Each structure stands twice: as C-alpha cells, then as structure tokens.
Length: 210
Image (spheres, rainbow, N blue to C red):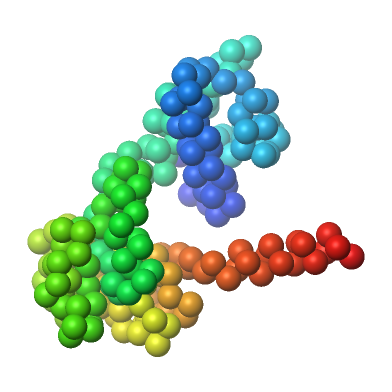
C-alpha cells in the first residue's frame, strides 16, 4: 500500500468496483478495459486509475484489467480476503433483518453472536443463534473471536451497546441506531443512517424541480 492516508471516498468507490467486477465475472467477462469499467461504475477512467494507484500497479496497457486478479487485489488491499466475525446487539426489526441477510457471510462478514437486553428475547433462538444478554459479550468475544460489533438498538440504548462492545475489546463498530456514540479513538465507527440518503434524494428531486 503506497499511502496510509487514503480518502474515505476512495474506499467507498472500491466497494462499488468489487460489486461491479463480481457481476462482470459472473457474466463471463475475464478482461475489461478501464473505460468500460468506468462506465459500469459511473465514474471516469482516470478516477479508477487514481483510486487503484493507492494500492499498487494494476492493469495491462492495451489490454485492461484481468477481472479476477483485480477482485483479489482489491479485497486484499481492503482486508476483506478473509472472514470477519461480528457481534450484533439489538434483535428488533432492524437486527432481525440483518441476521436474515445471508449476503453478509458471502462477503466475508459472519454474524456469530446476537445480543439483546429484552428479557422476552433472551434465550430464544434466531437464525441458529441463541439471543444472549449483552452483559455476557465480554466473555463470549474472545471465545468466538469477535472483531466487529453491529449496533441495531433503539437510539437511547446505542451508547450502552457501544460500552459493552468496547469492554469486550471489539475492534470496530457499525452503528445502525440513529444516535451518535462515544468510543475510544482507536476504535473506528461507521454510521449507517438511511435518512441521510432519503434527505439527499429529496434534495436532488427538489433541486431538479426548481
């Protein structure tokens, strides 16, 4: 990797590149030009070359990119060429939907444990996992080698969920709860808020109608 200071926008585009490349490979495309890949990803070819340059040299002049090799290289660069084990806190509507979303495991992220503080849910089995009280997360995390925490609680319980994850030495957190959390600086947090996208779409439509 040429630089540790890679823009977050670049990481986001790399995720799109992987998705597009995997679809191309599934359709039988073994080689693709930078121009065609750029069109499929809705960016220009110079942007793709710039994004990939952070991680090394890719492509063959006059030929393009070998699809499988590029997928493998990007996954290695992003650290998703292995399985990451995840803990989910909050088995409500959102949490239940995430547990049923089996594409997580296909893409290298396996939810191995589910936690909820609701007494009516504790002890129940869901998608092959027993729902456990979050107070047991600290002891289960090393046993299951949990590294990533997923918060899908109501907003008023998000910080408490984050505290349990920090105490369990979870390395990174995805927060679906519409609430900001405070964690030590060494733990990266990503926020997933669907309203951000809805607001953006509403604004773009409004702007287009002006």
